[in-house]
Length: 465
Image 1 (cartoon, rainbow, N blue to C red):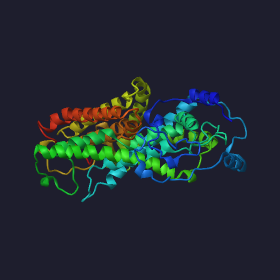
Image 2 (image 1 turned 90 degrees about the vertical axis):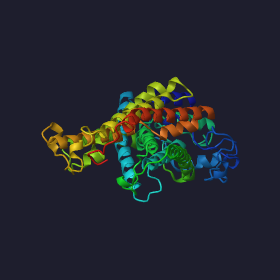
Image 3 (image 1 turned 60 degrees about the horizontal axis):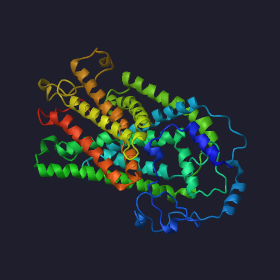
């Protein structure tokens, strides 16, 4: 049996991040029929007694079992307990594993976002902001991981005693405290979910809706027509409302899925995690990143650079920047997650500058004297200045696209932002935080991108975006 002191000792030794996504409260509100006989709720409350009562009128799973039944189940499955005392864990190794997970999942989170954007951008699409679906999907996964209690049940190799009810509020608090320090959990939430979603792309789409430049696959460039200011206002409000609503709804949906699948979600043994997964991910994470760098220099297909390769080169840098900025800044203001706010605004500003450069002739767009000409993809030698001027422009355009999709996409996050909005102590803090974040992000892009859009206009980029 693990006593309180042992749990606290393990947490202090291995805790690495007061990050919002790994410390957020569960985004689901219990109803009376979802409580154990002892009265402990299935999940923490932070949104009012009846926040989602109509969505959970019946309990998604039947968790009622006596302590005696749990003891019998534990005796029938002795393999879940470690047979011997685990060796002491190295802090340096834990940090290395955490960084490796962040690198690995940042790469695949970026690829998932780009792939989903491509799948949801088609003629006749009801919603033309492709990143909306990535933000929704990332929030669903975030809600699932926050609510789940089974995957990391063994924690740091010390599974709870069978007499500790899984719905007991004290155990839930301890489990959440310990779970936040596990490298795999940090990689799944901060790494994959944070990189799968993008606040900077959300703000970019909001500005493009405001300026009537939001790409529509159903309309050609010649079919783009002007509109009055009232229509532009309605367009930007629609993007803001859709994204916020989808993201928070996705967070709750993920939590409900975790509750519904609770009886069938397996527990990952700590020994497998520490002895196999953690060690393998060091090779996979750093190896994939190094492979992406090599592919950007010697690509099998030159068009891959702008579509994905440069993005996954810059993605781990953005994820690590967000991770350490949150470590430094999030604890400073309890009711305003400063770290997430700062990285979201900085990433949005960098995206705005890169977007401007990509849409200015002679930098990322073709010069006026070459308009109407179709250019070939650059050769490998163009990275080293050995190719034509036009090929160099194409590479410049592709690098800028990679910074926007990779660094800015991973440095900014919507899944963490949505988790923070639903877990702040009071609703007014959530409204202030959400409103200030959107106002600052959109206002910054109006200043950065608007100065180019409403002065000289955007030129068409020379590369495929």
